[in-house]
Length: 490
Image 1: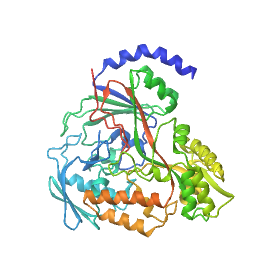
Image 2: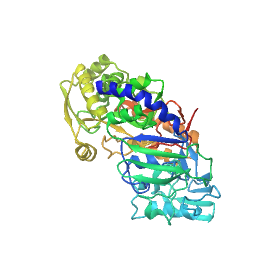
Image 3: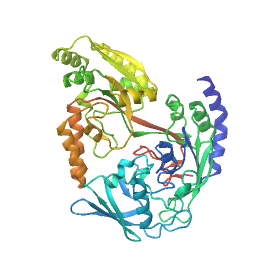
Image 4: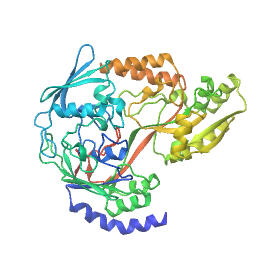
């Protein structure tokens, strides 16, 4: 820790001066550089982290709490049979190159995303569309093959932003959108700069310029914040140093939640885990707080089902799989299981490697042995995710609202339940928000009742920012550094 301390003392004098200089610009730290800047043609989270809501906009967008809000569409109507969505667009919207954004651009964007040769990383979002028609300049009619209550949610993803035929060819390196910020420059290996779009159709942002600076090394990230070279690091890579920032009044430590349900996945088709009583025993053998403390330096929110705690439909079911080693032992006895030995496959992230060691010790305490194998991502994807050759694994599922994966029997943990599949079918068809909430809650309860997996914690979003910055997202309902509402206080 000594090299950190030296930096701290030297940096304190500097940062007061640098922060004061430019109150309408911000430098945001990111650990990964995006491979390109076209969210409609790449899967890397770092693309959205720069451009989502800042540079590109969709028909709808995610708010900081995960709610689906109007964006380029000011409103929409759903037909009685649920098959047609009619979007009314904001009028007078221009792309950054000065061309008009009309219904024709929406037709172009959605048709391009769902085309056979589409390179969109989330092609499934558009699979239900059968036709997109421009009724007039500000009205678009989208026809679906089956009712889909989550269609406005799908249109809020970064992969569904509206682009123009005139500029899409250069989107990877010189993106043109409709957002409150426009592309200024990209210095490869260092940073991307955005500047305020003075012709923006909506509310003007407070910031005039924003730089997204790429710093992958945790020590360098710490130093950059301390020196004031970076004003905020929304996904700070060194949780072990957060205590130093918490003790420093010049910084705010912003701890929120992500879409990452971190789970001890169990292969439900493995002969050793097919009995729900054994899975229940494993769930009660786990001390979530020990894992959060030991693997995540205390950052993370305990979960009892596959659902994000910041979502309005969340149900806290942690009590149903509370840490109770005595109950775990008696469940194993009741299931007539002794000398159980399971294979635990761990991918590279520290939550998995550190968490795996802790879980192995907890399982040993109730009489279950584990054989740990550390895998690289490529091996993990091949063996566990595709090959389903495992008993237990630990992984964080970071897609938003993804409880529907439990309706896919071929998915890697191989849960096959007709009742649950019917629930998700019903959820897909439901357009009434109250009905969707009711089904979401029932779905959480069902997989908790069946002890499909060991539910550990929601991956924390740990950010550090200059204390004078307001409006950064606390949670991550999608992969974004939305700076549209960010400002400095005096």
